Image 1: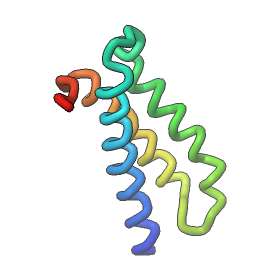
Image 2 (image 1 turned 120 degrees about the vertical axis):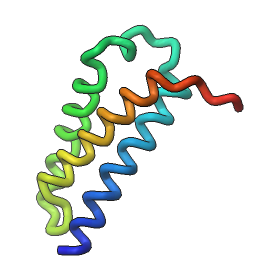
Image 3 (image 1 turned 135 degrees about the vertical axis):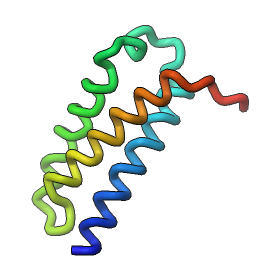
Image 4 (image 1 turned 180 degrees about the horizontal axis):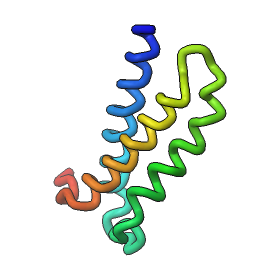
Length: 86
């Protein structure tokens, strides 16, 4: 049970960090990422992609949902953040 919680937390934090970094570096000039629905669409897509993995014993549906929430938060944070300096 503790391993499942750790995997869920890693999916949440990892999804946030990776999505924020990707949006800041690669999508800063894309108009579609500035739409209000962009984080929701990205989060639902990430959760939908992760759902088939939920058949594994450690990965659950909650983990897929946590990944979607993390990605949505990362997209929202990345589009409002200044671009990286390097």
